[in-house]
Image (tube, rainbow, N blue to C red; front, side, top):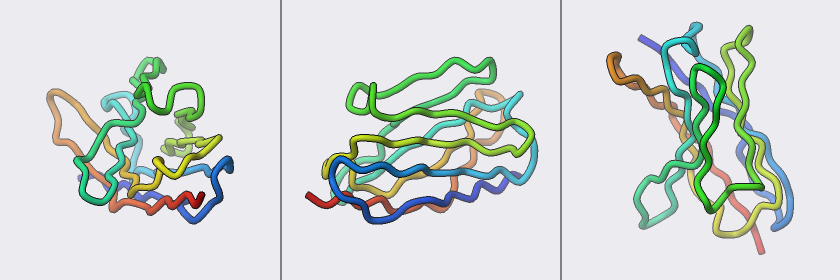
Length: 116
């Protein structure tokens, strides 16, 4: 069993920045693809960014150039640095650990609200 705990959400003005953190209860980065998803009211959950075990990254087109996913292996923590935030970025952000052969895990979510 793995617990993922997100933090760092909040209220920010458009153009501002936030950094989200996701702490895993144990070292899993060698086995899992770590990702950030978000879900806005009335919309489906969507993938924002992923970081693979080898360190390569993927970003949704809507956040490319503004968001950066990274990790600290010794802290079992994944980050999402969000810059140039827009009101459309308002959503609950979820951390995810995904593997084709192992159970997937989700965090409880953290609210990000961007005011115009």
